[in-house]
Length: 160
Ligand code: FES
Ligand code: FES
Image (cartoon, rainbow, N blue to C red; front, side, top):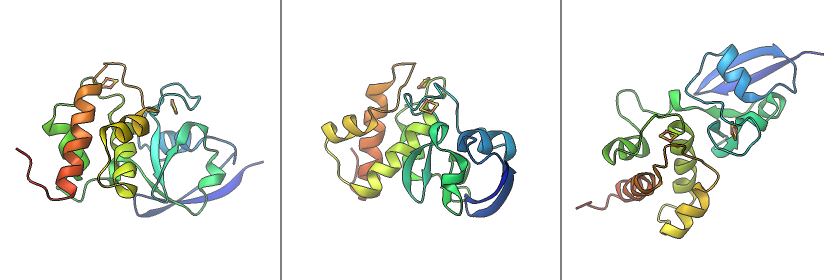
């Protein structure tokens, strides 16, 4: 039986009447047309579908939409502040950490969640945290550099 679900998506209240077990990813893409969040494996293994739910990293492909009811969801579409990119977005651009781009929105949101909780992560901590996000283009070195750069920018440390 369908249920009425209310989500706060990128600051806007959005309502959908749907199967409560439907994935959050499906609702974001198919109902709200927020296609920046990607479908990769559909099994919680690749991180392409990463969003933030109440600020926490969440794999939207394995999250029933009912679990997101009344929660704040951030997707890549809501991540920039107007024309100003989020520091993590800017760092990915500056480091050239984007190839085909399929993993990028998930990588950026996962990295942002890390830096929110741990603004000065070690390389080991970055690698461990980002381990759940797969890049099929094998851009891991640049992605690591981007997360380092974002951490430095957020800490307002000058980057040589
Ligand atoms: S699509 Fe969700 S983890 Fe792969
Ligand atoms: S940039 Fe292509 S999958 Fe990561």
